[in-house]
Length: 364
Image (cartoon, rainbow, N blue to C red; front, side, top):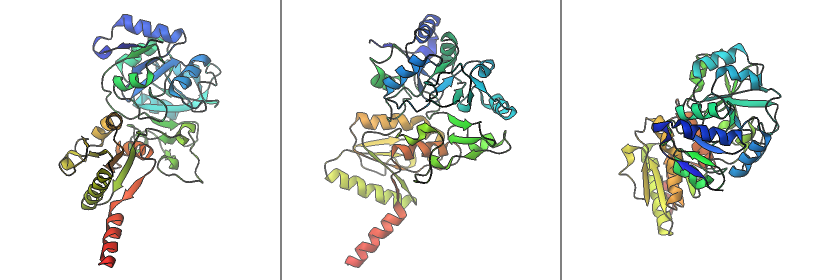
């Protein structure tokens, strides 16, 4: 299959291109498209065969539900039931936008789209290309992120093409996305809504609309007695090819730990990388240094995180290190993605450096 790569679509919104993209979806094909969060891999949400094609293109387990993207709020009750007043208040505040809500599904939605569940995840994105495309595609587009399953989600078109060329009919390239991490997922089927995945729409923001909202504890913990409520959260996500380590602690201890690790890995012949705030850009000597912006600007880290992980892959970096980010606001979503990308490999630099010093003292 030849993949048509249409560049600069966000500048032109070429109606003929958008029409052809919609036609591909209605004909059972696949089209990658930009949203405000990451790129999506779209198929007809109401066509079981389209869902199967999405799973095959991504190498995604078929019990990992797909998010159904809509472009009109009035279409919600065609695919979802049990839509509460709470849900409508949330929709009024955050749709269109980077929020997915889970409802009981109607019979219109095939089980292949929902991973065999009786619930459906629905999002109303806030991106002109996405909205025009969904409208032309018939109003219901199932779309996970447009990457090979397990790899960092794509935030620029070239990484979509890298993973998907020859597997899909068309890529609508809208340039760099605005947010950079996937949507918040909110389960509205519970008496008290539950956040299953953090994103740009934070717990605090939802708390301004809802009387109460819980958070799924498996978002940040790996424990045998905790099972993720969202099926997709049990799978490996966002992982670069090399090994990423997140370093916590005081700034001096973080600096010392990362410097020692870079020197050690370099001496062993490995390529090394660091992802640092601009305040630390001259602190380290590594084969690849990626600056994320100001330390306090978690939104900048969110926009760049997946692109940086992909660039490390491009450069064949074997060992990567980064500081933990503050967990306020979107920082919580960034840390969730970092933890998954690192396989929950986190080092407390204060404890590690103190142990190292204590060991040297005994030796002396």
